[in-house]
Length: 391
Image 1 (cartoon, rainbow, N blue to C red):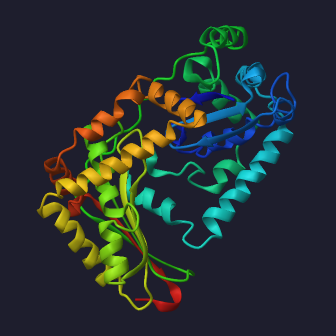
Image 2 (image 1 turned 135 degrees about the vertical axis):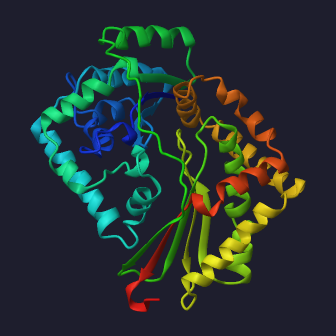
Image 3 (image 1 turned 180 degrees about the vertical axis):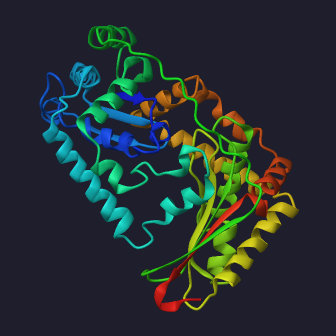
């Protein structure tokens, strides 16, 4: 098998604040036919392949997995999409409907569906991470016209703004020849230089209370953390693992199992390229007040801020992180995506050296960054109340 992966250096953060959701809409439009190929899926299936795509705030990624002997089919398909989409009004209408339904189903009609729309607006005042990939509001997608779509495509979906990575049972020279044959003739376009408004340091805690028709109260708190290539990113990754990494984690043991204040509780971060968020979110056990749950969480975080974690605890989460990275790299699909991602961050070789960054983290680092991240003035909180049991 082989995987052909094309990563475009465009995500929701690159959108016009008045036209959000375009990066994600494009992920759908890219399957609606291109200049010379009316149906993307059928030829790939004939070649024994499968494909998918995903959009984040930072990037958009497309990949095909197929038998290595049929790899040229993937080059033909991906290059034709990059050359130009069919751009029919019908295709736009079909995909717009799909995205609008997705928005309604997951973010309007679903219980707690608006949590991350609200939290992003609360935590970010200037940076474009303040909206989700689905878009800031439904009208932005509903009002998208064919010219808007063409402008977005020819600005971002150019060879100068894309990374091609191939993994599996392939020959490097053959891959180079195929890349030249299929992608070489496409006009390179202008490289995109990102100049986004930066988020100012937060200086006071923010709190939002929501009452909605949901089964139980929910608690969500975030704190700003460092961007992807900074030391603080790796420290924060290990901190979230100690606090929320499964059944043996500190928060689960204390607040779910022993004190039974939350029915579930997670601690994680978004893995954002730019300065992202550490998150703690959970559903309260019925009858537990928001204030009691908040105080108990604060007590656990104070422990992280007042004493170093033990060397054994740090070693445990480091080993777990190491094994996750190692297992990921065993899959050719993950390997192709990782190569593209690290190249997007500046150097594909980071894939081979990133583990060292985790190994360099000390218990003193964990204490220092816990104090920095979990500063009350760096926090954003949503108390999400169930209407039938207003507190």
